[in-house]
Image 1 (cartoon, rainbow, N blue to C red):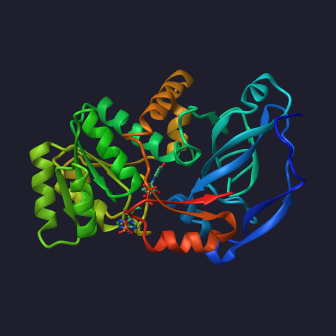
Image 2 (tube, rainbow, N blue to C red):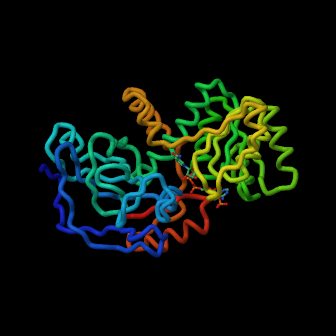
Amino acid sequence: MMRKARIPDTMKVAVLNSYSGVDALSIEQRPIPTPGKNEVLVKVAFAPINPSDLATLVGYYGLKNPTPIVPGGEGSGEVVAAGPGVMAGYFLGKKVSCSGWGIGGGVWSEYVVKSVKGGVLSLNKSLSLEQGAMSLINPLTASAFIDISKKGGHKAILLTAAASSLGQMVNRLGRSEGIQIINVVRRDAQVDLLKAQGADIVLNSTEAGFDQQLHDACHQANSRIAFDAVAGQLTNQLLKAMPTDSKVIVFSALSRQAIQASPDLLIFENKKIDSFWLGPWISKQNIGKMMLLWKRAQKQIPNHLKSDIRKIYPLQDVKEAIRDYTSQMTGGKILLRM
Ligand SMILES: NC(=O)c1ccc[n+]([C@@H]2O[C@H](COP(=O)([O-])OP(=O)(O)OC[C@H]3O[C@@H](n4cnc5c(N)ncnc54)[C@H](OP(=O)(O)O)[C@@H]3O)[C@@H](O)[C@H]2O)c1
């Protein structure tokens, strides 16, 4: 094993002991793992708390390994040791973004072993480790939404939970590509936030007259594609408001409710429901396209694909950090510092 720095024997790790929420988390001291062939050891710097992490805590996410598990879907850090293999050696000393999928598991940990085949990606030197920690999930998802929309010839996108970090990215990226975004949020403060950032159309789903406003906006812009993070009855409202031959792509279930859809909209108006999950979407792209997307995303992270940061907590205070995030999700990410 090649090393770049002195590595202690043990590390602090956040452990989820059962899929029963934040109270099932504890901080443990564990031995530092050794990277195997084509693996590297990352000294983790920062990791955001994302909605997918909240879903993981209650067993509502697509990955559900038997507990105990280490949560944390993405993070940043420096490669401090490399196992055998040319690629592993290449990463030694590099600043990287790492995913919580696959070998090594989640990144809410002071150190983590990752495979060089997709578990780590080099970060541009100019990027901060704070922004680097949030460079994977939302930036690539926003890029994917624009990619899917452009491929389908769409000039307008309907987007829910639009004041989220991801929503703000889609707005900025969409504007730069000449794509109109019809934003749906659930509070007036979110309308103000997006309008202050230059969004044209922002509708509050809790307001009287929302359905009519949504119908008018979708028909004026001929918006036939929607990206829905909320699900439940909102999905049906989107389907109803959009012109015939439209599609709603559900990519999260923030409402934790089953998707509603009136059969007549599907049968007589040829409206469709589809889904999006970043991991499988990436696996379907060829490696060349993925590297191009990653390179472009890195360049855009300081502007279109930037995430605001509301507060940084030490890993030790992970429970307090999660409670803070859950109480106010809009207005910047909460980061864990390892
Ligand atoms: N499928 C995928 O591969 C994929 C990839 C990336 C992101 N996502 C999803 O994209 C969404 C945004 O992620 P993010 O990291 O950008 O989130 P974020 O910045 O943490 O913001 C979450 C947003 O969701 C809103 N929200 C929460 N519960 C809601 C509900 N029941 N109805 C309507 N709005 C609700 C929050 O508004 P309040 O402040 O009012 O609570 C907040 O604006 C998440 O659902 C995430 O899981 C999915």
